[in-house]
Image (cartoon, rainbow, N blue to C red; front, top):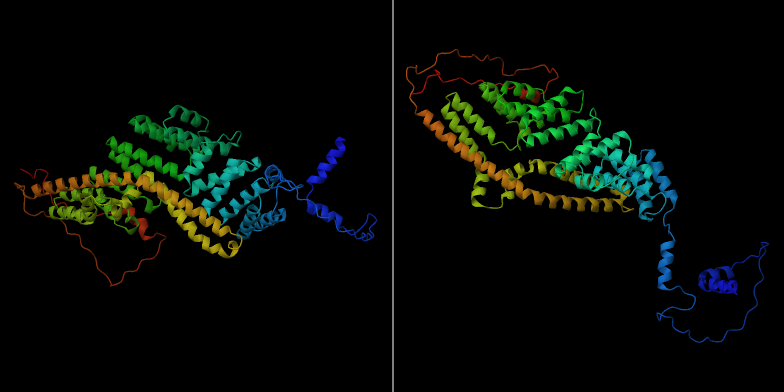
Length: 533
C-alpha cells in the first residue's frame, strides 16, 4: 500500500510537460518506430477542480512553498564551465581584456555557489591587475580572501593585495579595516604573516591598544621590511610621549640595519634629523638631512628644514640657496608660508633691510586672498591655497591620492569599451568606481573641515609673525651705527662674459639635479659685530 501511494504521489508531482514528452517519444526499446495509438473518444468535460487551500493551485501543481524549496535545492547553471575555461586560457595567453570579459560573463551567468566561481573571481582580479585597474583588482582579491570559498587561493590573493598596497594608493578601510584587522586567517606562510601582523599591530596602536599592538609586533622578524616598519611605529610612539632619547635609539637601530627599503630609511633619517635639530645639534641634523635619498619633487619639506639648520649655523648663503630652490615649479603647490619668514630673517640679519621688507610684502601678496577669506568668514574650502594646503595634511594626503587614482582608472575604462561593452563588464566597473569615488569624497569632506581650520589658524599665526618681523625691521633701519664707515670695502666679484650663446656638454646631470646644491651669493652689509647702540 505504501509503495502504491508513493507511486501515485510521484505521478501527481511529475510536471505535465515531462509526462507529455515521454508520451510523444517515437521509438520503442528496440529502436523501431512505435505504432500510432488508436484514436480515443473525446472525454466528457470534467467538473471544475475544487480550489486548494490557498485558493489558486490546481491538482498536480507545486505550491508556492514547494517551488521555493525546489528553487533553493536546484543550482541553476546559465553559463557553462567552458566559458570559465576559455577565460583562464585567454589569461595565460596574456589576452587580459578578453580573459576579463569571459570570466565576467561566467560570473554574471552563475550563482556564487558554482564550483569555479571563486577561481573566476581570482582570475578576473588578476586580469584587471595586469591591465592597471588596481582598485577593481583589489575588490575581487578582497572577495577571494574574505569569503574563502576556495581556501587554496588565499595565499595568492593576499600576496597580490600586499604587492599593490606597497606600490599604489589603495582602499584603506576595505583592505586594512575590513579584511586584515577584522579577520582571523589561521596559518599563513611567513611573508604573508608578517604583512598581516604588521597592519593588525598598527591598527591596535592607532586605536590605543598599545599592549595588543606590541604583541603583534613581537611576532615579526626584526630583520624584515615589516619588522622595521613596526620599529618605526614604536619610535614615533616614543616621540608622541616626547621621549626623544628612546626614539633616537630606535631610529638609529633602523639606520644601522641592512634594510634596503627607501621609504623606511628616509623616514628614519628625517626623524633623526628633526630630533637632532630639537636638541640644537644643527650640524649633525644637516648631515642627516643630506643623506635622505628621495626624488627631488618630494623633498620640499626637507629643503625647508635644511634651510633652518643652515640659518642657525649662520650659513645664510646656503640657506637662501635652499629657499630659492623651493621656487621651482615642482613645488608650486607646497604650502610654505614659513619660507617668507626665514627669507626675511636672513635679509634682516645681513642688514638688507629694504629687501627684508620686500619679503614681508611678498608674503602678503601671495596669501592675500586666503587671509581675506579667513577674515571674511567665507567658505574656506573655496580658496585654492587653503584647499591645497589642507589636502597636504597627512590625514588627507593618502585619501586624496587614492581619489586621484580612482579618477585615473575610471578614465581608463573607455579603452576597454569594445571588449567589455557587450558583456556588461565596462558598465559594472564604471559603477564600482563611481560608488567608491562618492564614498571617498564623503570621507574627504568629513576630514577636510578640520584640516581647513588647522591651515587657517597656521596662516594667521604666520601673518602675526610677519607683522612682528616687519616692526623689528623698521626698528633696525633707524638704529644708528657708531664708529663704522658708511661703506664696507670689499672685493667685487667679476662675472665673465663670452658669446651671446653658451653651450654645455651634457654630462648626465639634469637641471633639477642641481637644485639641492644652490648657493645664494649675498653681501653682508653689517660692518661690525658691535654696530648697534
